Structures are given as structure tokens and as C-alpha cells.
Image (cartoon, rainbow, N blue to C red; front, side, top):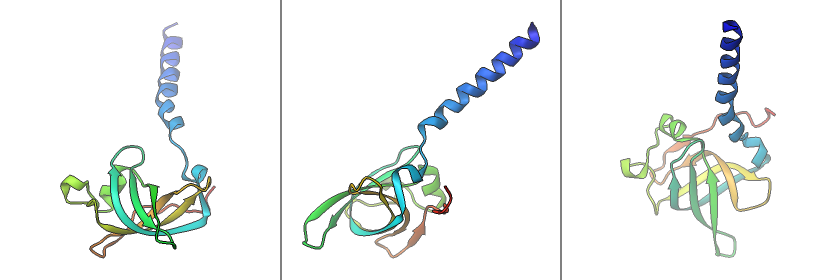
Length: 135
């Protein structure tokens, strides 16, 4: 009886711990690795949140019209490892012009996933080293 209770508690613990994994999505689920994306725009907002951070750029299209892009990044830990920091700690600055390289969204919206940033000070920062061919 005691052994059965221990096993049951262990199984429930493993199942409970796995629940957050279901809420996290694979990059491949939303973004098309066959659609490379390069954008240059003005940084308007950064959301420094888990599991993925987000940045928002105002990007001028060929006609000069400003389009608002929402770009997904790695989480805050990955950004810090790449040498980036929050705005209030001297990192991203609202109003800076930034160039991003990554992948366009599958749904055709003005959104994408960022793998590399070129900051206004000229620094080139790779923030995602994933293999786009891994499925």
C-alpha cells in the first residue's frame, strides 16, 4: 500500500511538472523557415517576458507607409546570455533603428521570429542558434 502511494505521487508529480511544457510552442509551428525575413525599423516597444520576449518595430514599406511589426524573440535569459539587457538597464532603447533577420510568420501577418539583431550602435547579436531544418 505504501509503495503504491509513493508511485502514484511520483506519477502525479511528473504529470504536473509536464503541464507547462504543453503551453510552450515550437518556433516551427508559427514561423516559416523557408521565408527568411530582414527588416529595418524603429523600435517602439519591448516586452521582456517568458517564455518568449517580443519587440515591436515601425518599418517603412516600399511606398513609404509605416507598418507595425511584432517580432518574437528568445526569452529574457537567452537575451541576457547574448549580452542584451532591458531598456531600464541600458539595453534596447525605444526610438533606436534596429535591423533584424529571422523568419516570417506562416499566416502572412506582419510578424516574425528574430534570430539576429543589428543594433543602432552597430553590434551584431545572434540570439537564436536553432537549426531551421530540424523538424
